[in-house]
Length: 303
Image (cartoon, rainbow, N blue to C red):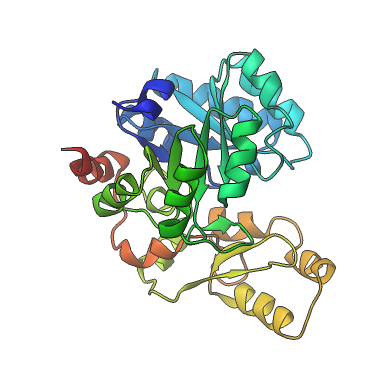
């Protein structure tokens, strides 16, 4: 037990990343049943689908479930109402100002966690009343910080900058990474890529099989003129990189990205023209396993 497990009411200080298109009720419930904190990724869900997924997760486990809410989502207020209606007591916010809803959520008895990419932003989170900070290094998959601070540097700097607990994220996938994060001062870890490559994630099999053949240079951070994102290198990635090389501006990148590109890749399995968001550690994961089996290997860090 430590600060994070006590605050969240979980057995192990392991948080599953709330990733778009792959973090539904099945994955979140499996992680929570295993003793971690399962997280439903609401960034890809319309409010009615989020409502269904929360209800389904609660049918599968009585352990705590969290929801990840990107604050820039156009229907964020509807999503918050649905979370409160379903008695969700832990919300992880990202992609926006931590000041926007924190006071209101805490008045409703919600524990608020915010994702940050720098010590400066972590301090702003603390000042805004956030309970716990997730400090995510740029090794992580998906949308990322512009400063490109690595996890090894970010965690101790963040721990030294604030007095609230820090969850380490970015580049962690096994017991060795957990031990390293704790040595740097973190009180818990968040893992995204490790759980994308689980049997319970809703990632398409085409996507999972592609990741099993990844190497150390299979991903790269791109689209910094729009919203930085770490992608697997496929045809879509090459198109984006070529556009950036010739100096394309944010609007042109946005138009090429279009709508539904991430869904096309990660959920529907178009591994060439879809947007494939994934962390650098994908090259180290060589087997798709159940969440239960993954936890058996992770909790060695606490024995």
